[in-house]
Picture 1 (cartoon, rainbow, N blue to C red):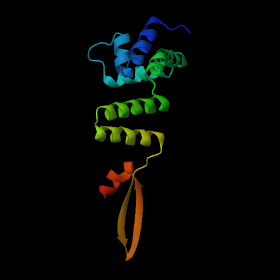
Picture 2: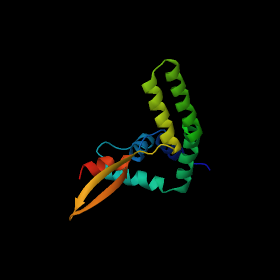
Picture 3: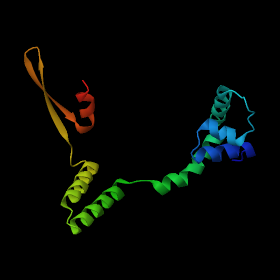
Length: 138
């Protein structure tokens, strides 16, 4: 798939982390005073081109593969950190690493309990840890 030099530059800029509008500005000569809306629309039209989208994905693929985190690798790293903490007799750090490993593996699930009085009836609500902040805001 061959792109024009400007489309290729746009794809490279966008794949490197720039947003669509900034990538468009880097690839095309945008006159000073050009409205942001015009740049945004032009950049959006480029990203509607299947060849440009495919090229951006192609450019991003090796980057994504390089930094990809797998559950297996994550658990291995947490175990290594736990072992290092035990070796240094840092029991609190070792426990933290082990709890993080358990959460990542789905073995350790934190729950909280709230008792709410609703029209005279007592209701117990169990919330996962990540919903606790939302519940406390009520």
